[in-house]
Length: 171
Image 1 (tube, rainbow, N blue to C red):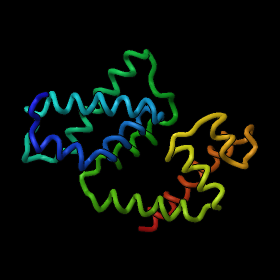
Image 2: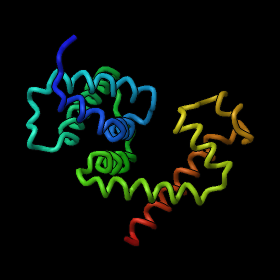
Image 3: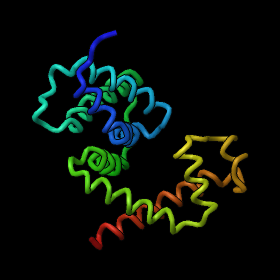
């Protein structure tokens, strides 16, 4: 086993959720993002000698993640669908924001918006995005009509986006 520097391992450990969020924002699939996160970690460890320890680790690591995702899209010969690039860019910017206070503020706003939703809807979002449950298993886990789960999730995402935009506009 290779001996990797404490700085690289610590940087990955401290920024795991942000790097992962960045990848999820780009590929929009938790399973794929997990695989790409693992590839990113390998690339970070292989490239750690190129990291300047006087600079912030997160933007450097997200640059590597961006390259891993680009390679993924190239291998898959597809790219993100048009119309959502701005949203993906905004999520990626949040994920790589060097200001930890900004990251914490965004999470606080999201949590506040989630708490405004009915418990049944919070549970649906947690099952889908927190536990990555999809399809029939998701339908079996909720009292929502299986045929309307996709529509319900789309409406919930829109509702959350509007709530977040309203709260952040007031800051």
